[in-house]
Amino acid sequence: MARIVMKFGGTSVADLDRIRNVAQRVKREKEAGNEVAVVVSAMSGVTNQLVAWCSALSPLHDQREYDTVVATGEQVTTGLLAIALQTIGVPARSWQGWQVPISTDDAHGKARVEGIDGSALVARMREGEVPVVAGFQGVAPGNRIATLGRGGSDLSAVALAAALKADRCDIYTDVDGVYTTDPRIVPRARKLERIAYEEMLELASVGAKVLQTRSVELAMKERVRVQVLSSFEDKPGSLVVDEDEIVEKEVVSGIAYSRDEAKITLRQVPDRPGIAAAVFGALAQANVNVDMIVQNISADGSTDITFTVGRADLPRARDVLGREQERLGYASLLADPEVAKISVVGIGMRSHAGVANTMFRALAEKGINIQVISTSEIKVSVLVGAEYTELAVRALHTAYGLDAAEPAPEAAA
Image (cartoon, rainbow, N blue to C red):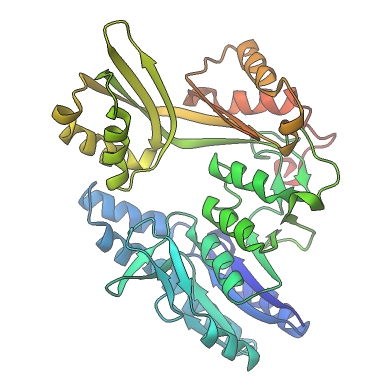
């Protein structure tokens, strides 16, 4: 007998027929003798609608009330799936984040999981019941509902798997595994049988939509074995594992992109000690995450600071920096939401030179200008104009020899 956490994303529970399909998958795991807990997202499109309503009323809305609104999507799905399971003879009960409880900090809209008391769920599972847990949500100090950020149901599932000491966390989605890049852009993208935690973490952090960044971070920390599978096909998925379980390490394992970026440039910032801390400290206090950063020193003793934030955070970032302009002393703020981040990732980079040069040459040959560059031990990222996203991804996929002989099934279809 194994203990498994099964997580189903929005497309997997998009309508009643798909919820019935999920119920049958859960039933099969139960009939195989496994203890099962399920984590679900909101039905496809529901969270986007709830977010849009909040933004329409106020772009700078109260994040606590935002959480109250957007957490309702998962509540609906848990109840519907519990009913579907009961209908086919599987004992099931829905659980909201506060009922488990899943405790979080008070960073509403982007809360971090601080602890899960899984004892009640374990007791129910041992009795043969399937807990259906709402992803994406928990309870913050003061007993307020808190949400974990977009894609937070992945984090809920991995955190729950760690708390329940599950043998595996299966993430069911609309793709059948982790590919070298998006098959919709590159038809010859290849599915990876295995990928290291570090590679998956980098790919997720720079735009790959298969798994949420913090879920991979937690899986790596807690050594939770994660499998990415299709909700709609019975075929092997991709395993996210320790690096030492991968025999042949590719120089580059994947190409990721993100269109959810916005670039901000502060012009003529006084070049004095502590100015960067003042700029990014103000943004941190507003829970605005900053990614790529470039600083240019001018001859007149000032500096330009360019950085990226999530596109959804752009209004908040502009508001915060606008109020701080006199204290920071910068001349002007330029914002550009029409950018994209393109990244190449691979643990093989540690032992191979020339990876960045291959990237820069391939982009130059396509006439694509690089605006910002950032690197890590196993990643190189560049910021380019949004209109070049697909061209850049295709060029790099070919440049690193990742094209498969045959198109990916999803692309072919």
